[in-house]
Image 1 (cartoon, one colour):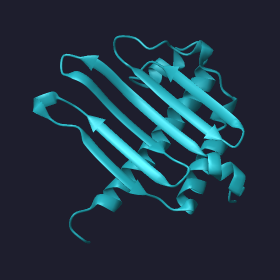
Image 2: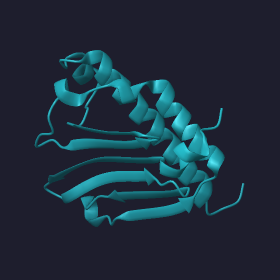
Image 3: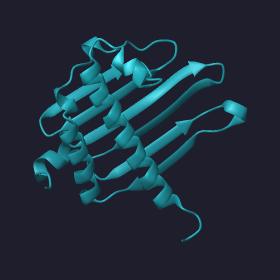
Length: 152
């Protein structure tokens, strides 16, 4: 089911994961904007790699699908108060504007599900973990499909 137009006018999602270390500021970030713009950046200085930036426009149907995934995850009901604080290993941020709701989460990088299970809020943190996995998979698929050099 499609979101009402008013909710889509304000719909926005931004995800960031990164750290500052021996190779400088390394990060992955993407955002979906209300106009349908998907922006992606991946910066790694490992072996003198450079920042990869991609930008494309996705359809309203795709934004509706992103919104559906977020809504069904129920992550907007969660609270990051009992999640691990960002540390020297890095940080994750997820910002969602969905209709009248504006939610931001900030936590440490997740190494494995063991980190999730050992947190003070394993259920809420697991919700976040799986939503982020779903969104990253979707974004990587869109980039691969859209930026494919050789036609199939």
